[in-house]
Image (cartoon, rainbow, N blue to C red):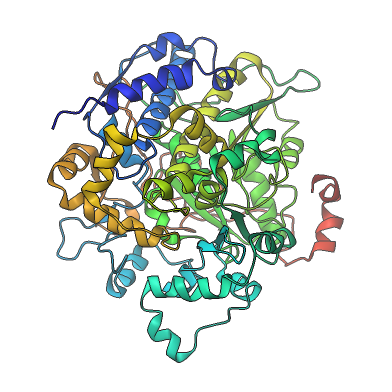
Length: 614
C-alpha cells in the first residue's frame, strides 16, 4: 500500500536539517564537509517496518550518512582522492541496530546457532553448549530467568517507575533488595520469564523511587534510574547541564613544548582509500556495547583493534561477542599482576587510539584520560582517547554507571514508547538502538579527531554518551506521526508489552513478528544485506552476519573486517609485527616486574601518581 510517508526521504531530511544544519553538532564537525555530504544518496522502502514509535530507521541512516561524510573528508585529506559517492539503504541500515541479535553460526547446517531462535528460548541448552565451544561464557551472574528479570522496569511504592539493572553482577541486586535466592518451589516458577519479573516486582513495590535511587547513590545497587518523561529529563538539572551537547565533544590537548606536530598515524605503503584506516592501532578498554561498537566501527574501515578484558572480574556478555568482536584481536590481563600492568602500559604506549568506557578495571587508576595523556606525553605523536558513558559528562549523574536501557529510561525514550503502545507506563523500546547509534557517533568523533590531529597536532579526547544520542533522538529525530504512520504500524503486529517485559522478552517476539510478515521480511532480510565468512575461531563453520551499511557503488572504499570475530582472551596481549595475522600468538615477554599480585597500598607505592589521577 502506498504511503505518503517515506523513510528514505525523511532520513535525507534528518541528515540535512538534524545534523548538517544543527549548530550543536556542526561545531564539532570538520569545516569542509559539504562536498562529501553531497555525495550521499538514500535508497530503500518508503514504508516503516519496525514496530517502534521512535524513528530508529531514519536515525541510524542519517548517522551512517554522517560517518560516510566525515570519512570522505579524511580520505581526501590523507590520500588526495574523492570524496566518493555513497549509498545508504535505509532497510539495510536498520539491521545495524539489531546486528547483535540476528547473526547465525553454521547457517546452512542441520542445527544453526542464533541468539534468538524462538520467543521461549533465546538459546536452547544444546545450542548453548555448541555456542560455548566458539565463544566461552563469561556470563557468570546471568544464568536464570530470575536473575535476568532483575534488569527491568518496576513500579514503586509511590506509583513511579524505576529501572534496575543487574550490571552483570545480579547477586548485588538480590542482596540490596533483600530478595534472596529462589526456593525449590520458586524454581518451578523460574522457568517462566514473565513470572520471574512479577516475583521481583512484588519485592520492589515496597520501595519508593527515591529510596531505590539512594541505594544506587550509596553503591548498594550497581546502577539504576528513575524513569523520567522527556520533559522531566530535559528540564532536570542534569538534563539542563548537558542540553548544549551534540552527539560528541572533542577536547584538545596540545603539547606544552610543541613537539607533537601535525601528522597522520603511521601506515604501511599499501594503505589507500580502499581501507582508509589501515595501520591505525586502536586499543579497546571497554565494557559497554557502545564502546565496543566504536572500536568495531574503526575496524570496519581498516584499523587494527586489540580488545582487553580483565581476568574473571568484571564479567562480560559472551552472547554479544560474535557481533561486537568483529575485526578485533582479544586478550585478557589480570591487572592485579604487575607484569600485566606493564603489558597494558606497552599496549597503550604503542596505540594511536584508546577507547574507554565505565567499568574497565576500575583499580587500574592510571588507565583513565589523565593517566593515559600523562604516560604518552613524551611521544612524538599525540594520542586520541575516546570515552563513552551512559548519562553524559556534565551534571549530577555523570559518574553513575549505566547501560542502554537505563539511558532510555532516564531520558524519557521508554515513557514515550510505553504511551505509544497504549500504556500509561514506560516500556524499553525493544532494540539496543542507543548503544549502536552511540557507537556510530563515537566512530565519527574519532574520525574527526584524526583529521584535526593531522591539521593541528597534539592529542585529543573525544567524549560521547548514550544520553547525548538520546537527547538528539528526542530533539532532532522524534517519533512517527500518530495517525499517518504509527497507528497502522502498531496494529499490524499488535504486541502487548508491559513495563516488566525487558529486552530478553520483547526482542524475540518482535523479530518473530517481523519474520512472519512477508512484506516486512522481504524488505529487511534479503541476502545482499548479509555476509558469510569463516572466522578462524569457528573451526571451519560459516557465520552469517549483517554486512557493512556504507556502500560505495564504484568500490573505491571497501568496508569490512580483516580479522575474524572471536571470543575473549584468544590473543597475546601485544601489538604483532605482522598486522595482518589472524591470531596474535604468545611470545616470551622480557619484563622487569615480578609476577606477583599486589594490593592497593602496594600499587600506590609503585605508582605514586594514582592519588592524583583518581
